[in-house]
Length: 406
Image (cartoon, rainbow, N blue to C red; front, side):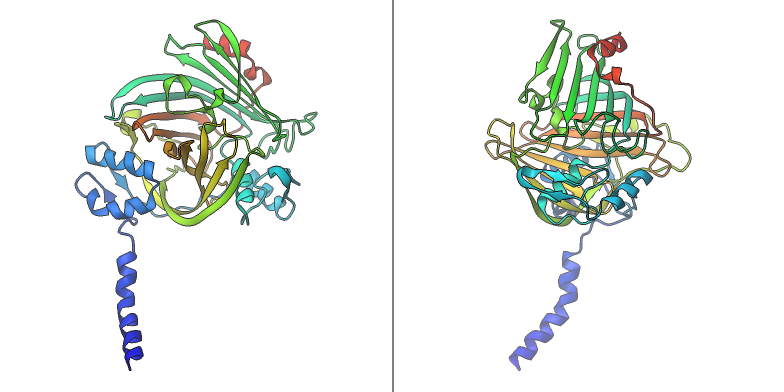
């Protein structure tokens, strides 16, 4: 009889237990300065710790609100969708984190079985077209009180040499023979004191071959070849290092281990989609204090831990949040821990404006956050072209970049 009573109590209480665990944060809720404290427990569960700190502060200060929307469907672009399908069953990982059998798309779509397989999906993810021309990117540096201290603007170019799916030549650039992965360059165009600063990064396919990085420093009028340690230095006093671009730009190497920590629902910024062109919205309407004003949705993610066994690397480990459903392997967050085990820097993808359905143009950005000082850098990328603008090889030479800066 006692056992029967316990069973009856359990079943009568079960609905209440489920209700108690159900999140208060759901579509239709708008978090504001007045009500956000009622949602703190759920916010803490749904957000990485650095984003929780930064955006609850934004709510407390009245800089932002957080409207919660229904989860959307984010299909991969056509070329990536076909490449993903063609990769199924053809790719394998090997010793020293190597990958074989890959041609294009996500190598282990749709269900990676190990941390390394998920790591390779994240490394090969779809974040931009094969040729990327981003004419206006502003870096905005904020102190912990939300006051902007400094800004600078750059132009960015990037071109893939392998895994091309949306622009001719498809597959691999003729003559490459598996040598180059990609090239990327930036040139600062304002303000005057840093105008003309350039950086070129040449990434190789061979994961055991060190990438080449060069910069032109206007103050000394010299080209400098950067070492591996230099790519973990903050850019021009910001909270961003080149290896944190797009949440995780670091090259996979044999000196890494990968582990899937868990799968969980995460609150992420929502892509804004417009069927007929992109609305022209001023920066003042979506950058508030040191936060982005965005809409949010709850999406399932993998939490992938990447441990760096190289003692000279700036971070001991990273935890990146990988979308499980969107077909492009979007990375939403990256939490980076220093060699002392402290949560050091964090990155948040902030797709505040993006014509996702037509894939014509977009405005998006990243929020870089120093967890030790609460200093923020907001990267505001404006009106970049997704239609297939060709990027010539000269865009990856210091000479051409300096000419552009003038």
